[in-house]
Amino acid sequence: MKLFGCAEKEDAGMELLGALTLVGEPQSLRELASFLYRCADALEDEGSLWEQDAFDSSEHVCPQIVVFNPALLDD
Image (cartoon, rainbow, N blue to C red):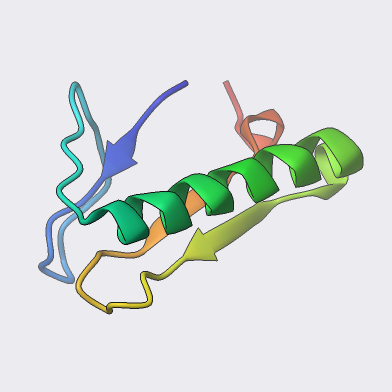
C-alpha cells in the first residue's frame, strides 16, 4: 500500500507520504473504517472495473479521502 497526499493549498501536488496521522472522534473513525471496508469489497468484486471512491466526513472537518485501484497505476 502507498499513501499519497497534498497540502490544503490548491496548487500543491501529490506527494508520497512516509506517515499518516488520523485525528478523530470514534464515530468519524468508524465511518472511515466502514468506507474502507466497502472499497475493499468493491475492489474484490469488480476487479479492474472498479476505479475509485471518495470519502467525505459527515462532520465536514476531514479532508477528502480517495481510494484508488492500484491495478490502474502505470508502474
